[in-house]
Length: 160
Ligand code: PNS
Image (cartoon, rainbow, N blue to C red; front, side, top):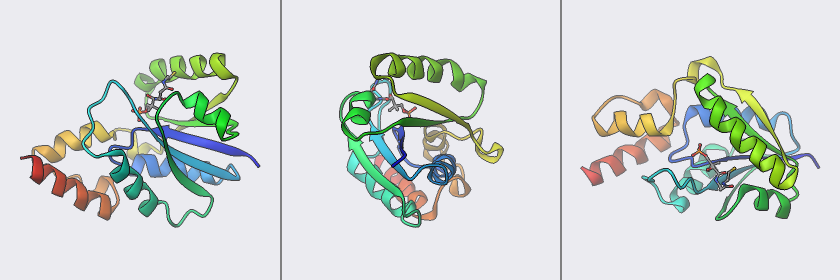
């Protein structure tokens, strides 16, 4: 069983994430989308809400499962027999930090990280930017699945 993990905050999931997860699902027997805590970010959705949205939008991918983990990614990989971490790279600006994490994870546990270039159509996308644009009333409908967009609009309205 070749099992990979696509870790991230997914706050919320975007078309860019779905692009990477879908392509990873074509390369591995099983892909786990793992919602992890990024200590440098403030979240808009609870982990449970993010999982719910991810399950909805990956329901057409039979070899994709959605999990969460509070702790180190490498410990998750060890416990779940995950052989590879798959990360999307949008631009050179992602590379520095992603390389650092990949090398740290490799050193801690031997698990390798594979970088997948994002489809150019989504290379400018990030959950953080989407949240900012939506907060000020910008149209982000085309950047995420419909169900996620509705929940984003609801949450933004609640917080206004
Ligand atoms: O979507 P993000 O916020 O860029 O994802 C970053 C994430 C959550 C994958 C990263 O912060 C992470 O792996 N967090 C789990 C804790 C951990 O293992 N930290 C050490 C990384 S070397």
